[in-house]
Image 1 (tube, one colour):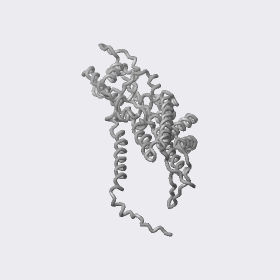
Image 2 (cartoon, one colour):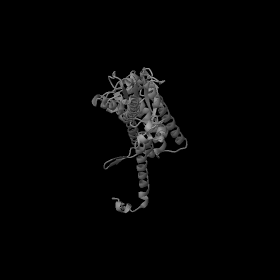
Image 3 (spheres, rainbow, N blue to C red):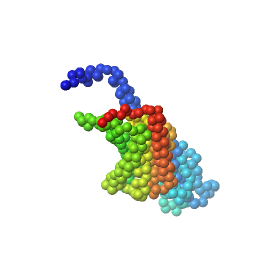
Image 4 (cartoon, rainbow, N blue to C red):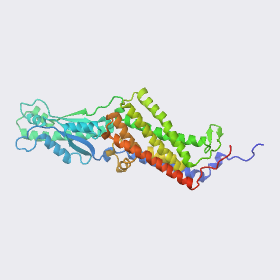
Length: 421
């Protein structure tokens, strides 16, 4: 017998205000939060710049000029560290070897090098012994990202040109009328500024962005994989419906506690992550040719990082139900991207994002990936801290997830009344 009950029509339902209320409020709130959080982290990096670590190397070995206590290099270094770029730069006075070590470990974004013959070259400019302009060298660190390298180059180059103008005024005043017009023009801007790469990376490294995009792949693999596994298990156990096009079905419900369901999902996440991580590396390294070294270490790290994200997604879904997908999206992606420090240096984002970076997963993972890809897998380049944070994150996901499901089970909060086959 055919069902004669009347069916609702879309036109009539559109007139119900309550039908519009929740979707409109949630969609508008999500759009507002996404715009504020994403754009808030990158809209004004120059204005937010605060204590960007830059090495300052004073290798000048020249004697102080007559009547002065310090040589030109020491005077310049003192001026830079005292009041050259406000609080935008954190100048670290290092030897040349120390600066190179910090460039190689990603602890500084660049360096400004004062050469050994700086004083001698400046002194010779007003004499017949002048052979070349004194040179200041700006070293960049592309492994810290193209924007970070650009900001560093801008700061150090500005400082170098400012120093050149100051030195030029002093030389011009000292020379008086003893020099010709050509020499006076040279003295007006006596210092040559040269920019070089302080720590080179491969040509297939996306100008220092491959670490960010690779990290994003790991986070997305864990996030999407976790949700796919969660939905797949719920469907297979009969707790959600299967709907493909016009076909709809529901499997018989399998009686199982929330805790056992979570254990099943997490075990499957651990197994399936092996496949997803292997395919990510196959695509990025073998097929696309991304520059990468320490391949076995990169695979192990990628697996642990993706697994930690997947376990976190399963825990959040178990605690919040269907709303958990939105929660995990904010935890792992929305708040993670602007606070990762992978595209915009953390020193160039507002303080709110610097605070998030202490515990947001994407920052912890990107530091480790960058260390492996660009800085020879050095522990002091961020890899050691990343391993620690991955372990903490995975443990937190396990503890939170199982604590919540056991609490629900003890309270008798069943997910669904079992249905017979």
